[in-house]
Image (cartoon, rainbow, N blue to C red; front, side):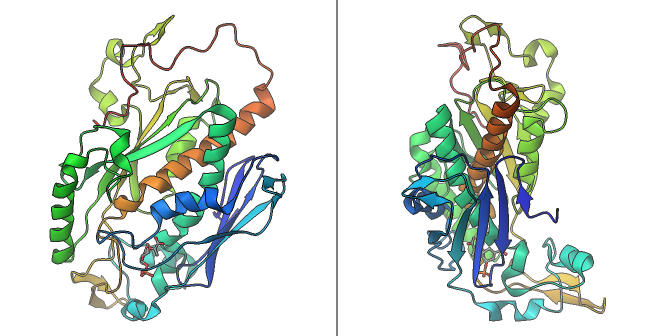
Length: 376
Ligand SMILES: C=C(O[C@@H]1CC(C(=O)O)=C[C@@H](OP(=O)(O)O)[C@H]1O)C(=O)O
């Protein structure tokens, strides 16, 4: 495979370039009988689309989705679902100075070395615009997971550059431009972003995504472990440089007596594992943290080389996100949904009629630890 298809049973094949006529995907393997409308998908796309605040790219894309196939009388039919999003606000002249050189930290160089050529307009295939189609596909997975299994997938920004964002409430997340779970910090985040934009620079971010209500048993034992597939899915998002499941790198200093989540008849006493043991879900919240690097397209002049290998300098013009992490929360939620739906169908295929000897434990014993979205 040439790297544009994701999944095993529930698959997504993505296509399109940032400045081409359209982007889109084909979702295959969706069970029949799921009620699905364009509005179900549009709701998610509107959370990610560009131009929604002064802190993100000012490119104006409505990201209007069209369902071309796979749905009849409002229900999925089990046949491939083709989704199309037309590009309407390309401004390719902004990329004139990038035809002959490479942005430091951008895929420009690696694409050129791999393919010998590239579409420089808007970063072509390497543009984060491609993530819109994952959000569209993820909306289908989110809906199926919620309706069939009661799984709820939510995310938030845990850190913007140097500013840690203590979690207050899920209620806050959709009421500020950052997906911050803490409205008190919004003015500080805005001031930080205004200064950063003025300086022509960019910054990274940390996000947390949580899936609640995942039943125990999803995931494969060796290859295709749930945590491995989540890590791969998150790493497939542009600019993601680190992924942690549960306590992640903090396990380095922990002892076994602290890390191992104890089981009681009332439920688990903690969730250091992030809801996955042996590559298989435990029924606890699946907790994922992501590190997103600073945007490589910045206004500041940086050293590079031209296509003959001679030294040059490059600065980026045009409409860029000073922090790609700001719009990445819906993308990370979508990728988690795609992995979970694929794993749910794989589990159903092999183990759908297994009856375990004990009933599933509640994710967390009542009154012991809250639902775990604590950013460390
Ligand atoms: C259009 C989107 O984001 C784009 C992602 C992007 C990049 O290089 O990743 C570069 C910019 O594109 P352009 O130069 O065409 O304005 C962003 O606007 C989007 O997310 O929908």
